[in-house]
Length: 354
Length: 89
Image: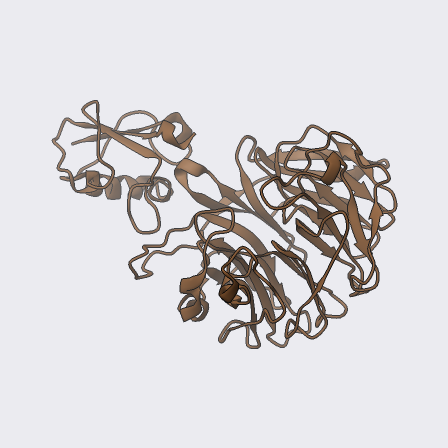
């Protein structure tokens, strides 16, 4: 099981490692600065951290020595992109790396960028940017739409899937040369009825892909939980109690029918139902769910697990989650029991086993 | 030559003490400063080359309109202060 977790937080990048059986923060990088996304390249041993400096904009840093030293590198940029909207980078929401070593960045206001030189330069995917349906995208919790999930198929055949809030799920079969929306079965009940199934207005909060069964995907959507077993061609809505609303989802790396969610009261309240923090867990593609509560606060919890704040490691047994109120929990047995690692974090934006 | 001085928050990317750079407009002075401080531009200007929404530029003690400041002419002895606006929190 993984013994290292990177946390992107409002006050820096934290590097938790397991030492002597205990998880501790071994290093804080960019102390005091908001870090929105983090990525480790396991082949080259490079770390990437995206910062959101507010006044001074989005920055991207890279480390070649596991975080001891960082250098600022080129950021994805909308410079030279024409149009009345005058786009400007507001946030790097997700960083991913594919089998070929290409880096992918999902951003607000909705551009997808890639780098083939370890982040020294970035190119906007204009095929997606110029898709006419993008005009219908809108912000989900932010002023503009953003790409928060990028799944590059590990079969290495060019298949990709990404998710946009608000803008649906998009597929490519050729590493981004062409794109098509794929949300059949999803519903947006925050839209007028005639728009409820419009792909461009869907709000998937998070999209994850089963590593071993890459045609299987899960979405935690603004309107509930959706599952696909046919590479997003069709989505089936499933229902969990006490709520199907939430932001995060994790799928077992080998069993595509097994997934975890952390529910909250929809829409605007967004704290645990009855103030009890629970994880909802399914092993049968959402036909049934059961609650996981062992080790989690069952009263007066306002913890919200944001979309990138739940992760599962490659063993499929170890999960970690951290909340916007600074609490972090870990399970070594698929969520049957949770251990509180710390209550003293800043708001957490992303967690990743590395 | 005009001076540029930046808030301490930009000390790693720009001059935190007054430094002179040639230029007849604010834009030109910033471009010259970027020769010595290559990271500065991206902290002051956004992707579209406009002054970031929560960056404040003062000249002669007066807050400048961020939409027009880049084209403002500057005199040889004027000081350009680059600060973070409180509006950004």
